Length: 134
Image (cartoon, rainbow, N blue to C red; front, top):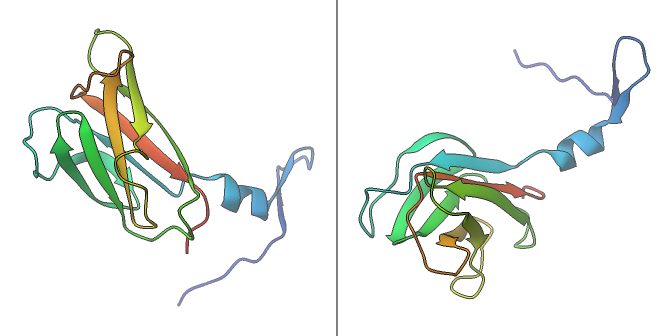
């Protein structure tokens, strides 16, 4: 039998620190994934190391990935955040590529690139989404 705990505010044992439930609900990542973006070919499914609310990571091309969300976002105005890295090489940027493919409520496309803009496959890619679920 399932239980429901209904509260407006969570507080610590001393009641010195409290947080509204709306802050907890709105402030958590609605999906995230950690994957290795190297060693796969275009069109291949990438196995994630770990994830939450992600059903598929697809290798589109070198340094270009589509992440499919299991439970849809409420709209396309969610926040895209994340990091990417490749060993000890130069700084790598992870960005959501609006110029190629606008996000949908169930998928977002990312690119990993050097600061100069040239795409590279990164071994550590970690995108996350913040916003409301549908």
